[in-house]
Length: 374
Image (cartoon, rainbow, N blue to C red; front, side, top):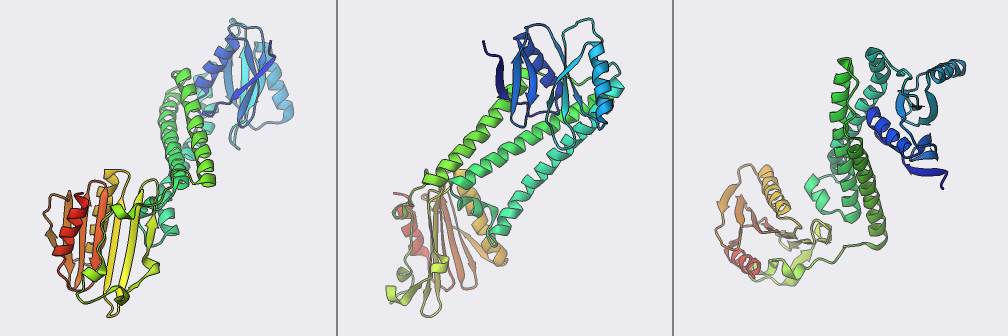
């Protein structure tokens, strides 16, 4: 028979009641906690029985005072078998008692509340700090990519970045859940009540699910970084395109200079097919095509609105003309002086044609509609 076993340590030290119930169940099956590091908890085989388990936050004290307190607890029938390593400010001592007649370690709910107020307050502040960092992430992304919106930054990211984002969202959910429970527990302590631990099995399953999801994100990130999983080449032939030669009569391809600084050719998880191409004519004319086939229609709608808003922000007096065509779910022609933007969305595809010289775009619009209707 095994003498020891190791399992994932509890992460939610701010919910001592749930940890106590879990350890009591382990003791009933013959396992007693004897060590707990940052990741794993170590159990030693004992005689199965009905044990009471209580957690106490460690407080600053001299070694002599700690020994005296330990001796006093043993006289009451309680034995400290392990210390759960917590944050820098506190650890938790774990006490077991097999004597049903032994008095409780903490008989005064007010003193119990004082003992736990500091670690719970620390967890409360730490959760808010983590959420603050997560909220600041979009600002960080835009700072790293000046001139681009958060949506554009996300669309340009490969699978590795999206897995990081998934992990960050998961951490945010964990922090919100923690704040909800901490708020309830601190209210109960203030009222002189021992906090309700809730369903410890549900807490345990939640913790294991979080760890497994984070581990899965990490493994997928590692594999995607090594092998570029789910990363393909964009299918530009399936997206609409307007040649600059067709816009200015009498010009040929040599008339137009391809601008490499304004070139995009990319396939990402959120945007499987996308390109951006800009040409500059010999007389200074500019023609830009941009087309995106996105993973979700909601993203296409957001990108359509963003591109229209960008043009209107740069040109507040732009005239707006609705484009009616069954091939488009929504389409508009924006005109500001000599600049024109034709913007259309069909399902998950968003197409934009921008020119800075006067030209009739009706023929180009019909051509784009025919390509999207295929």
